[in-house]
Length: 247
Image 1 (cartoon, rainbow, N blue to C red):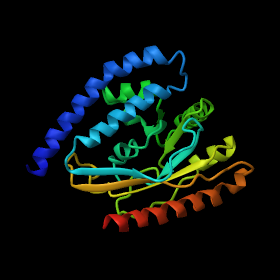
Image 2: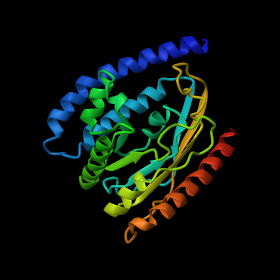
Image 3: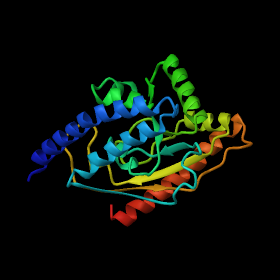
Image 4: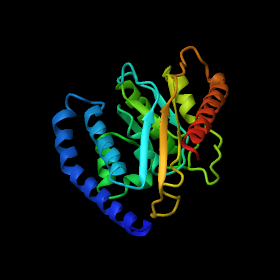
């Protein structure tokens, strides 16, 4: 089967999964949210759908590695490099729930956007001060409810495959709240789904959990050094994964 036909079939399967998940998520939301204000259960069910979307694609072989969290309800500010839209499906293989900081346009997609809102993901619109302020409030809220938050500090996908500069936002929130940083490194998704294209390609990809970095006792002036340290750790691990994958 050619890549175009495979892509069409897989997108149809993904659409069916997203549609099938809507009533199940709605029911779970109604039942659990009164007792689970952090929406951990309904959010985790949504990530399972994302993982399933990756598994129905015969062109993709995704895996997760690294240490498991001793306590998945201890909140982290989770940061990762960003190669492709497929990163979302790859990172969803990790066995704990995180709320995602995502651009506003994704929330406007019918069905998927409704599910993101039910899951408790956080909306942000680049360039709007009010939106950024609301996003920071949302991040603080999720962390206070003992749920980790997932952020791509590059802000966008790299066109070249090189790691872009990291922005300060994730690290500033981590320092302000005393929340540890959990770095993730991933590689292999750049060919899975090219930016601006719906055509899928063959990909072997891995996301690796790295050692947490504590922020307790750090001050706002420490943010740049923390940012650069985390970027360096992720870049080294990303290159190692690429070598192991033969990329």
